[in-house]
Amino acid sequence: MHKDEVAVDLSRLVDNEFTPHVDLDDVIATSVRRKRRRRAITGTALGTVGLVAGLLIATTIVGRHQQTEVGAAAKAGWTVVDTSKYGQTIVPTSGRGIAAVSASDVWTLGTRNKGDDATVALHWDGHRLSEFELPHGQYFALAAVSSNDVWAVGGNPPVAGTFPDSLIAHWDGHQWSQVPSPRMPAGAHMAGLLGVAAVSSNDVWAVGSIMTDAALVSFAVHWDGTQWRLSDVPSSAGGGIFAISARATNDVWAAAGTGVGKYWTVQKLLHWNGQTWSTVPSPWASAPNFLDAVRGIVAVGANEVWIYGDKLNEPDRALSAARWDGGQWREVPIPDAQPGSDGVQTTVDGRGGLVLGLAMRRNGGAIDHWSGGRWLAAPALDTSVSVAGLAMVPGTDTLWVLGNQRLEDGSPGPLYLAFRSLSK
Amino acid sequence: MQPRRARLCVSLVSPRNSSDDDEFRRFATAAIAPLGRLAHALCGDRHLAEDLVQTCLIKVHLAWPRIRHPESVDAYVRKVLLRCWLNEQRRPWRRSENRNGELPDAADESADPGRRMGSHDTRELLRLALAEVPPRQRAAVVLRYWSQLSVTETAAAMRCSEGTVKSQAARGVEALRAALQRRGVDDSHAALRSY
Image (tube, rainbow over all chains, first blue to last red; front, side, top):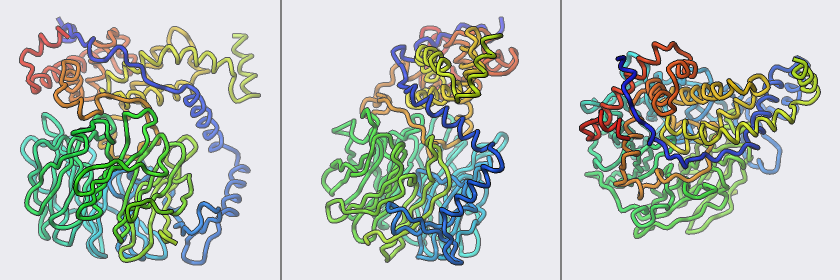
C-alpha cells in the first residue's frame, strides 16, 4: 500500500459552523475598480499624455529644493517631499520606518516594488531625498542616536538552501554596513527582528522572534557599544516581541505575543529595569477583550505608558489605545479612529505628550495629539495617506509623517513623506 | 454559442453584464462557507481565512465571464484560493508588512488571550501541529484528507502531477505526526485516526 493511502481523519480540523463574513458588494466593486484600473494603465498614449499634463498642472515644483506644496485646505501647512523618484516604495506598517536626527537628517525605510523584497534606506538631507543601499534583506524598524549612529533591524527572507538570520545594519555617517547578530540558541533556524529602540550610543535594544524546531520564541538583543548580546527574556513571553520603547537605561517597555495569522495577539507586556526583563501586570488579566491585538507600545514618562492597536472582538474592529498611569491601565478612545483599521503609529512629542498617526481602511489617515491629559487639536492630514510612521525632529516642534497613499481599492500607492509644525 | 456571442456584444457597450453579476452572486453566496472552511483548514486562522476568501472571490469575479461552467467552476475556485494562500505563505514576516489594505471583519475567539490560555483542545492541537507543516505539503494533506478530494482533483488544484500529490501528502502526514509528537501526543497514528 502506498503511504498516501494511510487513513488520516482531519474532519474535526475546522469548526463546521465557521462562515466567513464576506461582503459581496465590496468584492464586486473592488473587482470592477481593478478592471478599470487595468484598462487605464493599458490606455492610449493620448490618455497618458493627458494624465502627465494633469499631474504637472496639479503639482508645483518649488525651487531647487524639489519639494511640492499641495494646495488643498486639508493639506495646509504640510511640506510634502517630492518622492516621485521613489514612488513605488512600500513602507513597513509596523515597527518604526522613520527616524529623525535633525531637520536636515531624516531616515526612512522602504521596499521597492521590484519583487525581491529588499529594503532600502531613504535619507532627507534638508533639500532632497536620496537612496542608500542596506545589506540585503527586509528591514522593519529604525532607531537614530545621532547623525553617525543609526540602526536598522529586520530579517533575511528564508531562501531555499540558506540559513536565514536576523539582520542588523548600522549607519556610521558614511555607509550602511551589517553588524554581526548574536549567535542564536541551539535549535533556532530562523530569526527576525521586528523592533529597535535606542537610549544612547552604547545602549540599544532590538527585539523579535526566533523560529525553532518546535515553535516561535521571543528574543531580545542588546548593544553595549561593542557588540550585540542575547538578553534573557521570560520564557512566558510568547512567540515574539514585536514592539519596544526605550525611555531610559532602566526603563524599557516591550510588547510580546503569539502570532495568529496576521496579528500578534498579545499575552504579555515586558519591562526592563536595568538588570532584568520581567512581565508586568497587563490589562488583559482582568479584561480579556481589552485591546486584544496590540500593535505597539510607547513609554511617554516614568509613570505613563501607552499601548495601541485593534479591538478584534468588536464588530467594527476600531483602533484603540490604553494608558497606564503608574497604577492601572485605562482605555483611551482615539478621537479620529474609524471602523476598519490598517495600523497606528506613535511618537512622543518631546514635551511630555504623545502623537498618534492612524491608517484606516476606508477613511485614510489622521493625526491625534495627546498632551496634558487631554486630546489637543492636531494637524489635518490628506485622507488618502495611510500613516506608517511618525517622528518628531528632536528639540523642535516639527512632525514628520511617512506613509503610502492609498489607491481606491485600499492597496498601497505612491510613497508619501511630509513634515510640518505640530502645534501651529 | 449564440447566446455567448450576444453577451460579448453587450459587454462592449457596458463594462459588465448585470446578469453575470447575479450569477456570480448566486455562486458566491453558496461558495463562501465551504471556501472559508477550506481557507481556515489551510491557514489555521479565521481572520486570514476571511481575507483569503475575499481575495479569491475578487479574482474569480474578474474572471467570471470566462469561467462560468457549472462543472468546473468549483475546481477553478479551489485552485484560485490555493494560489492566494501559497502567495501569502511566500512572504515571511508578513505580519510586519503592509497588508495591502485588506482587512477581515469578524471576531475570533482564538485571538482572545484570556480564552486561549489552557484551551488547547484537540482541534487547537491539530491546528497548531498542522501550522508547522510546510505550505505545499499542508495543501496536499488538507485537500486529500480534509476536503476528501481524489489524487487527481488534488493534482488539478495544486497544478502538479499526481505523483507529486502522493509524495507531498505522505511527507505532510509524516510532518504532522512529528509535530503532534512534539506537542506531547504519544500515539500520533491513533490520534490522526480518531479525530
